[in-house]
Image 1 (cartoon, helix red, strand yellow):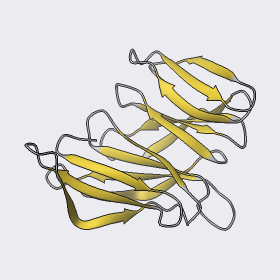
Image 2 (image 1 turned 90 degrees about the horizontal axis):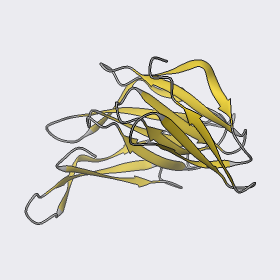
Image 3 (image 1 turned 30 degrees about the vertical axis):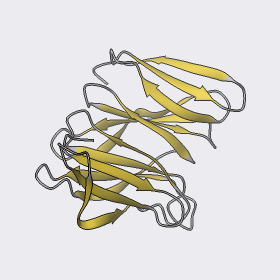
Length: 178
């Protein structure tokens, strides 16, 4: 999270993010006003949260987001003065089924989610002005069985995905222009 702010993802049941300012001397947390923001997870699990490297945008992977079992990523801008999260317009973007892991490349251009129930990774570009995600072409890439976590190498050149049900790691090269 950006310097001076902390976020706690309150997954199942509440599907909110608690927002705090951090006292730089003591590390103490003080709730912002408002103290929470809804993720759009619909009481079935906001799974993981990530903040872009510049501290301007935050994203939450929502396992299932509505009665049709459609999974989403919630998108937020971060107020640089208060740390308060505000949903973007639109507030969510569709992803693969059961997104669990979520990661952003070090340049802040790309976001990836590991979708455990359709064995894919969803790939997005990040709008540098608004933070809104746009699916790449193609929008997904196949993984091993039941991908759970995704990480981007610090160089920004590679993505790794752990596949829980077949004990493998899927490895990808990032095309820096797409």
